[in-house]
Image (cartoon, rainbow, N blue to C red; front, side, top):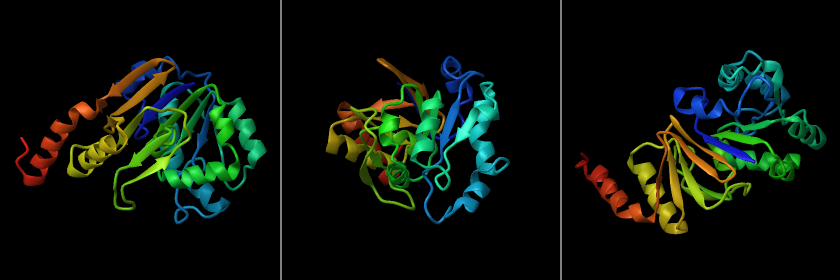
Length: 238
């Protein structure tokens, strides 16, 4: 299984293209799993089609980078939470080369995967699993959620497809992210891959590659992290 961890739908840019063009091509069959929205954004099949139907802003944003690799819209299928059932989801997964998890709320996404009964089908999938933001985080066995306006710091259990590290998505060098990284390293002992929006991670078997501006922080970096945190907090950052 190959994993591609990302932040946003910009993986057709030069920082990622040179690696991913070896795995995404015009013959690739993609399955989009847009399951990470909250119930205030979509509540039924009609609203789902408004948000993700062909021609919508979300549709265009999601398929655009795949088109850059020569993948046609007819080779991109979708799971519709309101119209697909367990059997149709499993069939689509089995027929795909790539599973693509969109960003949003990881808790909602994991719940919907459970509702559809497809967690095992995903764990048994032998192709490429891609995800942006929440869609990247859920691939791990456990991950932290850096605080934002809608949620506080917390840990989640993911699908368990990857283990031994955590990721900090949408990384920026500010107090919020640095504090979350420090806490994660101290709580779990795991290294954290920091992924700015022009960054990601590519994992193919034993091959591990940082993309773009991504970098790794671990226990050996705690003193430096505390120094950066104090400097930002006091305004003495250089």
